[in-house]
Image (tube, rainbow, N blue to C red; front, side):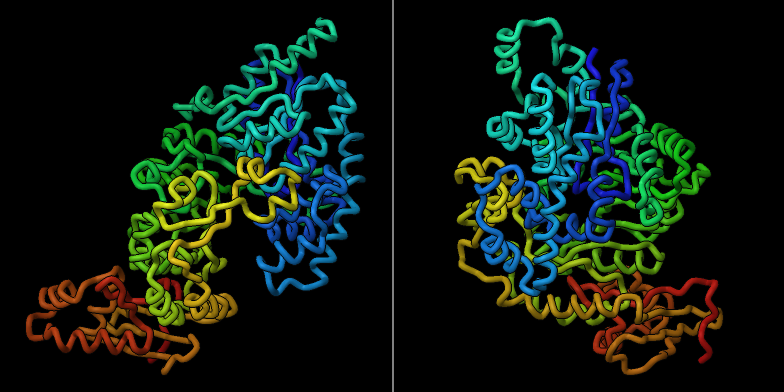
Length: 617
């Protein structure tokens, strides 16, 4: 029976174990196949230092900086020069890049060969018949460099690749262009990889010529159709033993605060209804499947008990909305004491945000993308700007670390929406700012990619960075690339109208955590609002009577008709003059206490916790 080694190369994160490899190891254990996992990403980080490693992994991800470092080793003298890479790729992506940063990137190349030497020497390769590489997060060229060495060292060893870089036509193209690879697993390999190994990926007693013929015949791509897992409860618990063992013996361990990683679902339930136009996640496999709540609780309890870590991040693309009635209340009472992060759609209620917080949510990746409803409709998000804004406010208020991006450059967007957005953003400086404001990326498998002309996208081509990683013809790069460049059929240049938004986001990021807009609803019927944002006309305001009633009502977006109806029902018709209420709302908008979007009014101040004494006044 074959023995398998699964390899996690740079530039995978150091903070958590690799979920895919951990599930594969557990699947092999079920088949009684010996399997180990090598976290060589730690070896490279120990050479470079944590800060430099994370800088390369994060800052150069979409310009393939890490891939190019290893590609220069794999393709000596076959790639364009570093000077061309700097001018054609790095500067357009980051015009403010410092010369020192560029030199630091180039200097990293001297560590590639010693790192590969160390990887080769670290393992007794004669123990393994199969070596599997995961290929995501700038791991393709690092993996190919080591695979090439392994084939030279042991020509009979079987090399398998899987991961995001092997989806669709990318996997077969890797197989065609890189002779080191024997097998590519496209999509979910939980079942297919172990079954392929168990079925005889390697035969011991063959003549040399017969083996060569069989090896050529066996070089193939295993598609996801045969491996998709319909019932996620059938998956084993992931085996993180080797990650935590590697972390424990690393000299970097004191600098790394580890997380557990888990999944409750695969696919995207929203994408099955209406796929977001820019989203390429899941390839062609959008079928949504989720684990039963009991299974999820049992798995989390197993991981907490085994590894003693109480911080966890879900790998799900989206939370199953049924969990608000099942899993999340169960987590509240399960006694796991877990702090968790999820990726979430933003059409939530305040009650659902509270359910998430009580279940242990302390961080969330929110699919906001825009604060313009017409732009959100263009991208098929299924939410409105007012929903995005109120959910962002509730998460900020609850102390949940909200991460999100503000995107622009959607085909057909109205430039006037960005002028309105730029005027709105200074009102929001007390909320969690976007991590970045950037032009929408065009990824393989997205509707923008599949139906480019239909969306007014022209001159679709692989991102220029791929030319600096692979010395292949344009048609080959077309099949290997995941990121693409493009122009607009109407000739627009988004930078001509988004700059005020980009500048407002930069100001927001600089102010993050230093200003506030908050209210206390006192028992005496006085609502106190304090404001320390730039441009605030007064530090404190007192709202009573109809003002208090309206401000509290607009915790969610309300139309003028709804507001007037509520005031009538609460205080009587004599207090509900529409013109008076309208003028009050307009006055609040002018001093940024209120937002008006999509014909709805939304209060912007954060509700203070009851533990905080209201200010005197």
